[in-house]
Image (cartoon, helix red, strand yellow):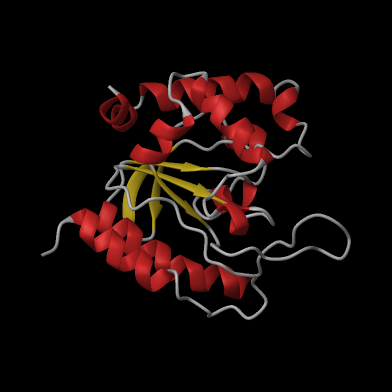
Length: 203
């Protein structure tokens, strides 16, 4: 069997050519093929990630990486040691009523097949779902207040792993800027920093 890094590169080469969803706007946005026991799952790329060629490359990313810097990990180190995925890997386009369109069930199902291959290769010990759409793929509680700031043991795509959710770092969100969100975010970051997979990756 090929080493994990080589398998990830082959997987990403196939994924980068995906055209299953006609309403999605390419290119496919991929993180680095990092053989990591930590899997971060975002929601979907925004309108700028296609030009910049990596996930969380715009304003939400600046906020996200400030959060990780608060527990001692800078952006470059994070990108080089964590596998960054998303519920959907292409930009969904704009919603006529404003904001980015939420991917539909069929689009999420198509992309989950790629995610299943990634989890089979990586067998992650810690998953960090970022935002409600990512959280909803593995946890049923719809309210951020009910899930942020906790470690959840989840069965995701046929594997068991720990999940520590984060809110989406969108500039439009006020949840993490006021209580109880502010304290729950701080608690979630503390739990991430103390998780064995994180400590192993960033020791």
